[in-house]
Each structure stands twice: as C-alpha cells, then as structure tokens.
Image (tube, rainbow, N blue to C red; front, top):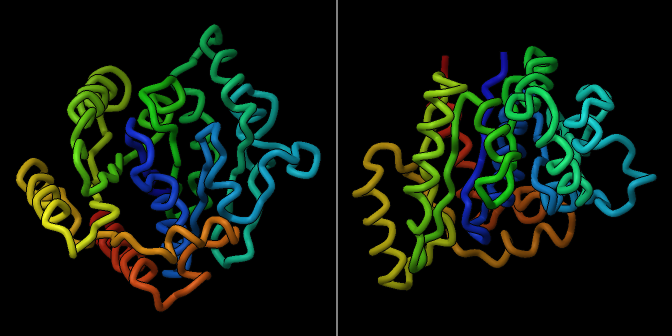
Length: 258
C-alpha cells in the first residue's frame, strides 16, 4: 500500500508545488512507483510537468471530475515522460468543484475514497494541496498518512503554521487518527544571508528532529525548470537545487520506511 503524503502550507510562495513535483520525480528515480495528485486549483503541478492546464479538451479527465464522482481516479491518471512517475492533473475548474462538494455527502473524505482505489498500485502518492485551509486541503489531510510542511527561510516564515498544526490535530481527532507530521522542509535557503540562518535555527528550535536535514537553496535552476515543463532534476541535474531535492527524497524514503 502506498505512503500518502499531503504537501501543504496555507502561506503561498513557499515552494509547495516545486517540492511536490521534485519530490515525486526523485522518488520515481529511486524506483518507487509514484503518483502525483494535483489538488490545487492553480494547477501549477500540472503545468510544471509540461501539460497545458487550460486545454480542457486535450487534457481529458482531471481531478475535477474525480472529486465530483463523475470519473474514476484510475481513468484520470496519465503517465509522464519519466519512468515510475504518473500524474493526476487538474484545471482551475477544481475551484468550482470545491464549491459543489460542500453540499455533497462525505464532503471531507471524497479524496480519501478515491485514493484508496489506487493506493495498492503505488509506493508513494503525493498530494499537492492549495495554499489555504480549504475543504480541498482538509480532504488532502484526511486522505494521507503524512503531512509535509515546506517553510521558506524568510521573515514571517512561521506565520500561520500554528493554525495549520491545529487543523492537523483536529483532523487527527475527528477523521484521521493515523495522520503524522512527516517533517518540515526549509526552502529558499540563502546561505549568504544571516536571515536565512536565523530563520532556519528558529524552525529547528520549534520543530526539533522533525526538521529535515536537507535545505532547499534559493536557486535559479529551480525557478526556471517549471517554465520548461520539467522537474529541476531533468532540467539541470547538476544544479544545487536538483542535488538538494535528490537528498531530500532520500530522507523522505528513510522516514517512511515501514
């Protein structure tokens, strides 16, 4: 059965989708059968893999139809150009679907129900959730074994994190007692600035051993890769960003060993 990891942070611009795409890529490179579920209406994980998220006709079935119960998840999954790496894409229409499911039965567990239908086919399922504490995000938490929290090493980095952790505790209490915090990943780390070092120290002080040893550097290759529709490892595997995500994936595998 797959290890299901929900990547979330209610604060935008922290490298959430970048982490989802590159973690999935390097898990697949480690010979782990991996599914990336784009569950963010912005659809950046979809476009970041070179798929036109606004071409609804060419895209076919997406997470919108899946979450509304109009399609099976297995029918929305498509292969990528990378071995062991599949994607369940999304479009901005997912935002409208979120409004629709608020009045439906089992509105909090709809993603969990569909994930269960394919979890035996994968080693890892990565869920890229929206940058908000929305119904979609709660669905992601309930569907998962683990929560992964990217935090940028900049001012206000921990703003909103306490609220997110409270939501996690509520989900654990009411719907998913097996949910665990896999860890906190420091992103956009710039070793040239004292601010990055100070914020990273603060993150380590707050989360202790849950802080990943790997930090993701502020790196131009990481920023450029999505515009080319590829993970940074496929864009420039020798870049600092690619090497960091490769090491991070190793840590994730180690922490999720059964």
